[in-house]
Amino acid sequence: MTSEAKFGHAFNIIFGIGALKLEKILKSVGSFEAAWRLTPGQIAEKTGDPDLEKVLTKKAGIDPEKECLNLEKEGMGLLFCGDGNYPRLLLETPHPPSLLYYLGELPDFSLPSAAIVGTRKPTRYGLETAKILARDLAQAGVLVVSGLALGVDAEAHKGALEGGGKTIAVLGSGLSQIYPFQNRGLAEKIIERGGAVVSEFPPLHPPEKWTFPQRNRIIAGLSQAVVVVEAPQKSGSLITARFGLDYNRDIGAVPGEISSINSEGPNSLLKSGAAVVSSAEDVFALLGLSSSDSWPIDKIGKDDEYLLDLLAEPAGAGFLLERSGLKAEVLNQKLTILELAGRIKNIGGAFHRVKKF
Image 1 (cartoon, rainbow, N blue to C red):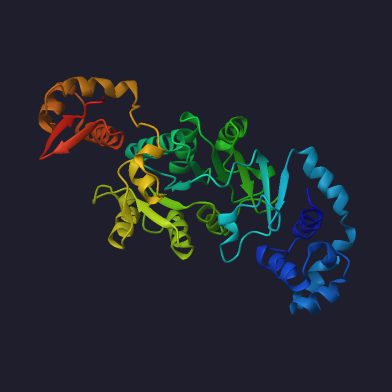
Image 2 (spheres, one colour; image 1 turned 180 degrees about the vertical axis):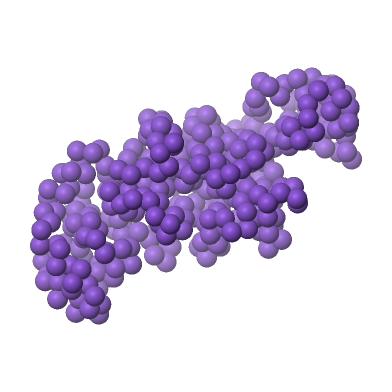
């Protein structure tokens, strides 16, 4: 841990110091270490922020060395925005976090990266799509970024792990307050498999309503492309997409049923010019990767193999509905997943099995 990270952390744990005030201190003084030697009044004067004088009186009771030892005891790492291994893509954004706390192993940030985000209350179609996209991207060596939330985010992380790749979970809380509680086991798996859980908030910072939109800028900042799977019109995932647009990232969206509330977000993005994402290969195109750069996409769940067996010859949905015994909604979801996996094609209303060489 660098001295700048150490003194930056000491400032960051002071109640009332948020990301923008932390950035203001750094830019106005030039370094956190130099700022720590100043009085609260001197810092307030240099930043032009008189409110800081009162807030910073609390720094008198903080020992930077002791606080850093506490981080190390918890197994937490800390990056300063001036460190050589700080993510380059994130550094290019308007307000990169001055500090980035992490658990696990930071990946090679030169890898192609894509965020997969969506609603906390997805349909089965959304869950399966997120998992398949993330799995196939991870198999091809793409770093998968998401927010560890319930629903689409969690499935994206699970898919990346299933694909044997690396994934980063960006939290809207401190690392000692992993949220949601239900996904703490998933966070542990991400770390065990060589990924990382990261946050700009100090370790004990609780999740709050405002912290999630703030963390969404980091998800977009770490990614070359942002893909929205399912999301209502007012979903936080669309905030991530807007950050992506601001950062000149490529935006993709998975089309959905026009009658579904979860399709409102992706469909509105598509109307605004976002790229249609119907398979991982579409995301490869957004990332500027050719098919030769990626691995074959030919894995599907065993439960879907019987549908492929029914397609020894091209067949329509009516035939498949009758022979499979599935409900229409379930059949449509499975056919969509098979299309995403590149195993079938819909040509003129008839489904054709794609032969693998």
